[in-house]
Image (tube, rainbow, N blue to C red; front, side, top):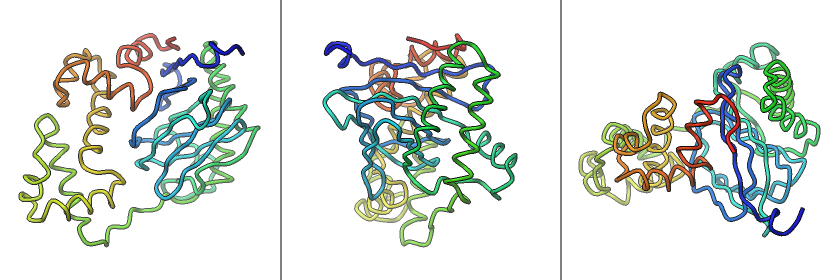
Amino acid sequence: MGTDEGRREWARHWQHAELPGLDLLRAHYVRHTFPRHAHDGYVIAAVTGGIEEIGLPGTTLRAGPGSVVLINPEVPHTARAGVPEGWAYATLYPSRELITEVAAEIGTLRGTPGFTVDMVTDPHTSRVITEVHRAAEAGNALAADTLLRGAVARILTRHAGPLPARESRRAGTSDAERARIVLEDRMAEPPSLEQLATELGTSPFALLRAFRERYGMPPHTWLTDARVRRARRLLDAGTPPAEAAVVVGFTDQPHLNRHFTRIVGVPPGAYRRGRAAGGPVA
């Protein structure tokens, strides 16, 4: 690979119409960094080149080729290049329903499954994940679905247990959860930290500390992530990006574009085309 090609960034984020409950992302990032964010569903990422550096609560991972990164729903994390040439990866974003369905089929887990490790060195599963992408991009849904379920079953059998419930006994947890509800309800016009604390009968510093402890990020970072997540659902439903931006509380479409691209990895327009076409978007 030449120097120019090695530093070129590209990404494809899409859905296959015959693979419900699954998002696919294949990309090469060099300068792009993902700010702290979380997902509704699971993340299964096979690094195929370079090094990805993933910031998780309490640890930082460095994932290279042959590594598979496993992240449970609602776990805050960041990602960036760990080497100058960046990193390439093929990522699966299966929904909770899909993971639970596979877990029920293999019959080894009860309840909602959760990954018990953040990263494994497993070249075989890494290759299968890239093959899921290749099959889906070739329009071979039968092969893609077969490979997908095999990879997920292998991961769940080796690296999963019951998804742990969040600890809710710490002081301030209730305030943090109430604050989240307020921010969700008033996303387009949120209160300031001081106003929010006053409404909840606590202090700004105590609320900030409790919120960060509960959700892994401060309220303003969580709100940006929540706005992007809601914008994704609106785009999935066919809402134009400019309208979605206003509904979720961004000042305009460029404001949405900037945060959406940082968190999702592609601009809203490319994301929307990846749904409409039912196939990969360059």
